[in-house]
Length: 177
Image 1: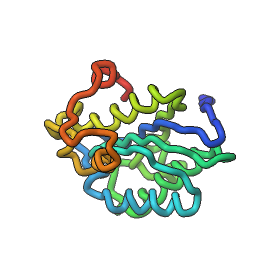
Image 2 (image 1 turned 90 degrees about the vertical axis):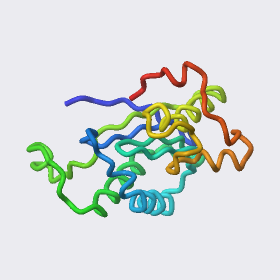
Image 3 (image 1 turned 180 degrees about the vertical axis):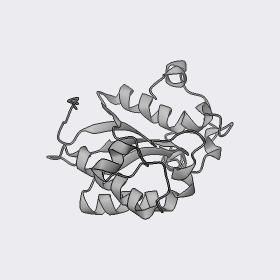
């Protein structure tokens, strides 16, 4: 069994990527975006954290989170979000034998990607990556046209222009998925 080492810093800011187990042609996350939002809302109520940036794609999502001072437990939060969302969706997905033995659903990949944000440049580079993701995957031509994103909230705060559609080449070309 593998041992995963995660950097846990109390009050840390993190970039996350979570992916569905079956990504091919799967639009589950946007088809059930209200259930996903509710899973986030309930988890934030029970275990507060701030979502600085987010994009919900059909088969994966990216987030920037700020944890409260004195708290480094993002793992419990993701467990709750994933399980609450899974319980809200009617079963019917393929479930492998190993997941069946463990009583698990087959919606999410078991693991997720996490990255501790190191500095302001790292923070904004990841925010750009998050907001540009729908263009990168070919769902829209302009960032402003993707509704499942915090992009418009960032525009309202004056952090982006509404017609922002390009990112630095290192953001667009990054292969983090």
